[in-house]
Image (cartoon, rainbow, N blue to C red; front, side, top):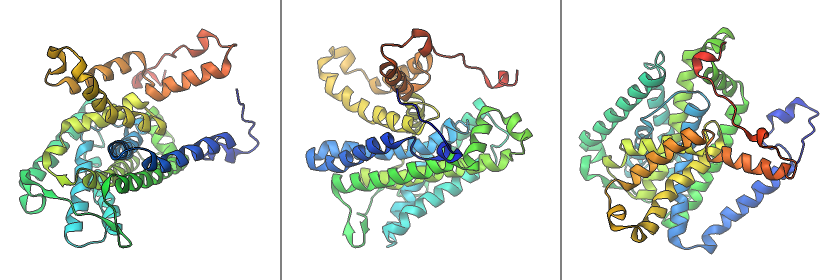
Length: 358
C-alpha cells in the first residue's frame, strides 16, 4: 500500500496525490484518444453520449454532492443550453461563441431559480426544482417562434476554425475536451475557498453560518455553477441528438441525472464518471439481453425506468457510497491483502443533518 509522505500544505491542494496518479491518468488519456481509431462508429457515439452525461453529472455533483442541495429539474438547464446553442447557430453566430453562451444563459437561469429557493431545503427544495423543470418544459412547448414547439428543428453542424465537427468521432473528441475542462474547473473550485464553503454548507448550515459563510450567496453561486456546466452539456447534447424537441428534456432525464450522482458515488467527481457510464450503458445492456428474457419480461413496458428505480433503491440501501465507493473498498482490500481485516471495511454509521450538532 502506497503511503504519501507530505512535507508541505500545498500537497493537500495538488491535483495529483503522487506521480502514480499522473501516470495512470495520462495512460487513460492516451487510451481515450485512441478509441475512435480502434472501435466502430456505434461504440464511439455511445462513448460520446457518456461524456456528455458525465459533464452534466459533474454539474449536478457540485450542487448535490458537495453543497447538499437537491435538484430534480436539472434537465431544464440541459434544455436551456441546448436551445441557446442551436438558436444562436441558426442566427449565424460561431460555435466558439455559442458554446460558452449556452453555459452563461444556463448559469443565469440557475441563479434565478437559486435566489427564490434559498430558504428551502430537502423535500421542499426538490418540489420547487421539479416545478421549475415543468415550467421550462412548458416554455419549450409553447414558445414556437424560438423552439419550434413539438415540431422542433434540426441543429446546424458546428465548426471550429472552419473545420466542421460532424459524425460520431467529431462529437466524441469535442465532448471529451469539454469533459476534461469541466473536471479541471470543478477540481479547482473544490480546492478554493468557494469549494470549502460549499462543503461546509452541505455538512451543517448552522456551523457554516457561524463561521461567517453567507448562505444565500454561496447557494446561489452553487446553483449558477451547476446550471452553467449543465448548459455546456446541453450544447453538446444538441449536436449529439441533431434534432431538438421539448419531450427530450422531461422528468425522466432529470431522474437519470440524479441516478448518476447517487449510483456513481455522492460527493466524488469520479462518481459522476462512473454514474454516467452506468446510466448510458444500462439501456444498451437491456437491449442486448431483452431478446433472451422471457417474452412477458422482455416486452414489458417501462422495463428500463423500473430497473433504474430498483437499482437506485438497492444502491441507497446497500451501497450508499455508490460505484466509486465500492471501487475504493475493492482497491484497498487488495492493497492490504493478506493483512486485511473485515472490520476495516465495515460501513460507518451515518447521521442525519439534525444529528450532526450533537
